[in-house]
Length: 170
Image (cartoon, rainbow, N blue to C red; front, top):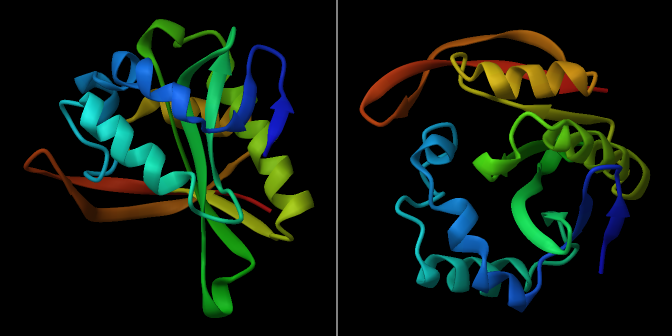
């Protein structure tokens, strides 16, 4: 069980009770448009139940709720890499639109990055936002991530070929 305080929010393990409110926060096209296609839209009660069953079975825990005032209003997680890249993880996150612009995503990213270095023995955490996702780019830069390059025409989202940026913190 992970419980990390980070100012405006808490990063904690997902719990079964989150399925009640998860669809309320996750079912938003503005969130979906900036995430990988595995994040469903529309986001239903069944999606929340399926996600929680899947994620709570994984050890060590690498996916966490962003909790504000006792409610999961977003998610943040690490995808641990394998083989020669086992010292690295990709980080991803999303936050309910009603909580945008309050520094919550930045605080969550800072604390999960610190957790990754201290508890998972990683030497590198990286993110690959779409190049047009200005809000996520600001979050990464505020959290001390550095842009290492542009991956031209590397993603297909909603029928559009997009560039991605490689951001990392070491």
